[in-house]
Length: 414
Ligand SMILES: Cc1cc2nc3c(=O)[nH]c(=O)nc-3n(C[C@H](O)[C@H](O)[C@H](O)COP(=O)(O)OP(=O)(O)OC[C@H]3O[C@@H](n4cnc5c(N)ncnc54)[C@H](O)[C@@H]3O)c2cc1C
Ligand code: SF4
Ligand code: SF4
Image 1 (cartoon, rainbow, N blue to C red):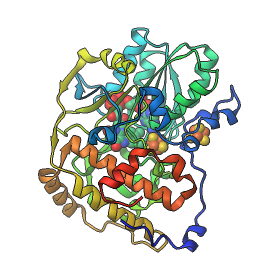
Image 2: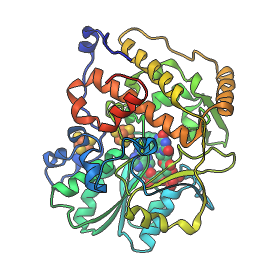
Image 3: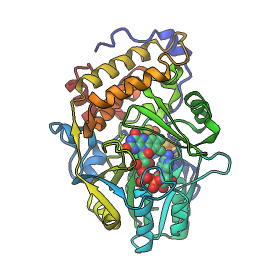
C-alpha cells in the first residue's frame, strides 16, 4: 500500500496536535518530581524493543508468526474461573489471582482501579490491601486510567511486595521507572496485564456509548466480542448486540480514540508477567473462556495461585486471517487519508443486516487464536499509519521492529 498521496497539508495544519499521553498516572505522583516520571514515559521511550530484551534477554522472534503478534510467552492457554466472579469483566481470573496474591502474602498490596462515584465506567485509582477492595475493582473502566498514581501511596507506606494490574502503557512506564530511579528499586513488583486497544479519553466515553447503544445510561457491562458484535448488558439483564458492521460511521474516525491509543503498539501487554484477556479464546455460549499468556516465572507464580480454580482448555485455531487483515487495514488507511473531508454519519448497514453478516462471518470466518492474530495485526498496521501521518517525528522512537515485519508480511509499505 502506497501512502504517496498523503493527507493534504492544510488539513493536517488545521488539526490541533495533542501531546501523546495515556494518563497512566505516574506524572500525578507528588512523592518525586514529575519530570522524573516523564523520563519513563513510553511515548518518549517507545514500545518494547530494549525493554523486551531487558525482561526476557531477547526481543520477540520475527520468524515465528505467533510470537511476532502475541509476544514472548512460556505458555498460552484458554481457561475459565470456576465459579466465575459475578460482575467481573469475564470470568474474573484477574480478580481471583489478585485476591490470592494478597491472601497468600505473595504481595502486600494491589494497585488497581475502583469505579468512580461520578460515572460507573470511570476509574478511581486504589491501592487495595484487602480481598474485598480487590473484588470491588472488578470489571473494566473502558477509558485511559491513572493506575500508576497509587505507586505514591505504596511508596509512602513502604510497601515491599506489590501487584500492579495494568494495561500495556502502565506496565511499560512502571518497568522503566523502577529501573531508572531509586524510589521503587527495592520493591518486588508483579505485573498482571490486561490486553488493551482502542481506548478513549474519559470525556469521550458517554458520547461513544450513546452512539452505540439505544440506552447508554443503563449499560453496566460491554465488550467487543469475537462474534463480530458489541455485547452490551443493561441493568435490567437485557443483552443488546450491535454488529461491528452496523456501528455508526462517526465511530470509525481516528479521533474517537485517544491519540496515545492510536500510537500504541502493545495490545497484548508484552512486558507483563502474565496477560489475561479473551481475544484468543473461543466464544462459547454460556461460558466465559479467557485467553492467558504466561510470560515470565513471576507470571507462572501468579497463575499457579488460581490454577486449582480454573477449568483449562487447549487453544483452538480455525481459518486464515491474512485476507481480512489486508482488507480491513486497507479500508482503514483510505479512511485515515480522507478524514479531513466532511464524513457521513449514522449506520450505513442497519442492525438486522449487520447481524446477518456477523452470523455468516462467525460461521465461515477465522476463530480462536487466529482471531487474536487478526485483531493484533490490524491494529499494528492501522496505528503505524496513524503515527506516520499524524506524528511522523515520533515514528522512529515509537514503532518496534516487529511492526515492520507485519507490514512486510501483509504487503504494506513502511
Ligand atoms: C479499554 C480496554 C480494552 C480491552 N480490549 C481487550 C481486547 O481487545 N482483547 C482482550 O482480550 N482483552 C481486552 N481487554 C481486557 C478484558 O476486557 C478484561 O479486562 C480481561 O480479560 C480480564 O478479565 P477478568 O474477568 O479476568 O477481569 P476482572 O476480574 O474483572 O478484573 C479486571 C481488572 O482490570 C482492572 N481494570 C479495569 N479497567 C482498566 C483499565 N482501563 N486500565 C487498567 N486496569 C483496568 C480492574 O480494575 C480489575 O482489577 C480490554 C480492557 C480494557 C480496559
Ligand atoms: S503517559 Fe504517563 S508517564 Fe507519559 S506523560 Fe502521561 S502520565 Fe506521564
Ligand atoms: S490502548 Fe495502549 S496506550 Fe491506550 S490505554 Fe491501552 S495500553 Fe495504554
